[in-house]
Image (tube, rainbow, N blue to C red; front, top):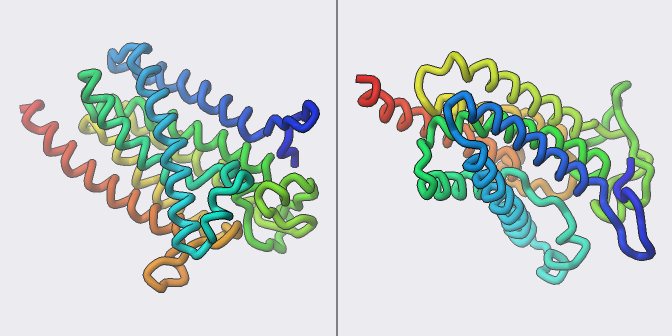
Length: 264
């Protein structure tokens, strides 16, 4: 793959960053299109998108640092330049983005449920495109795979940045996640015109994302997965996935209850 898009002397431009930027702009376009269906202005969507993007980048990095420190990594290694270039934990970013979304939506006077319904299909799209960046960079790689669709990383930069095993047959877990995110987006777009209450699509996103990640985590092989509560199957990714499912059902419960008086 191609972790470095091009170099100018010692300055390197990463492929991951370019793909992440592409995903952001495509996701914003989809969010604006969905928001117009409920009369939400494009300016409000752009404001929210920038807010949740910044919160997401910060949240993913914070969770990454927490997990590394809990797993015993020395602070000098965690805060080194090489480690700080890693993408972080995406679920930490989403949780931080959710908090920022709740705060900014209230500031802008937007209804939580209907605004969330417009944004989450775009969130899934941005995640999907971001996983192609992971594939290019070699990060978030899979376990050893003996299937015909296994992939091999051969670029030394992938090992330099992410410790990616080179010349080994691995599960293309980045593509598994890419497909899962696209499937989540498709289901959310299908559900949106059929929703029974404002916020149903928002709730469904957390449930579907959590379930998909819990399954895909089976083939993740990068780094120390961070087993929690002494359980070998409860990695950090799977723990946050279960938290996402709980958040989804909680949102569905409260948003459905809030919608009933309005309907009456």
